[in-house]
Amino acid sequence: MSDFNELNVGPRWYIIHTYTGYENKVKDTIERVVANRNLSDVIFDVKIPVTTTIVTNAKGEEKVVEEKIHPSYVFIKMVMNDETWHVVRNINGVTGFVGPGSRPVPLTDKEVFDNHVEEQVKHAFEIGDLVEIIDGFLTGHQGTISEISDDASEVTVIVSTIGREMPVSLDAKAIKKV
Image (cartoon, rainbow, N blue to C red):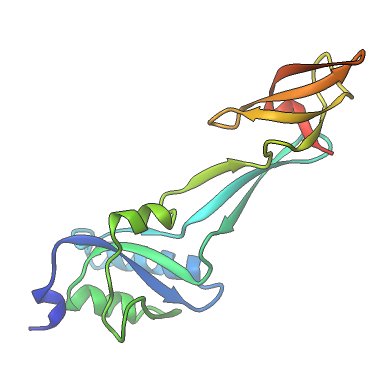
């Protein structure tokens, strides 16, 4: 019996190292192998942590841009045993598991959170950015972002009009960076 089977404590998150640019291919292959070999009871999830940024162009059109947080790494939630280790390790594009030697080390709950295994969305704006209003009664005015809502759908912009500064709450789609 191997060390994997003796130390098995149930499903845990592990990190797989891949060749550069092979992350999506490795993820797709693992998902196909799980379906074909009926391994869904020991391999539960495969993730490539990404940051999704919503970028607005000059015309006000939004574009969603995904960027890998950890290039060349894929996260997998699985029960570590001889069979699952062998299946994952022998997928084309996989160079190995992260850990000393050939021994995979599971992530702690804090590491799963810190490594953004779950997808996170952020907006392209930050507090202090100079923006131009492109929609609404103040179209054409410029201001500085002073607040952003938690879901980044609304912003408060400090606009200077008639010699006075006033805060204006706007939809995030109504502004663009200057």
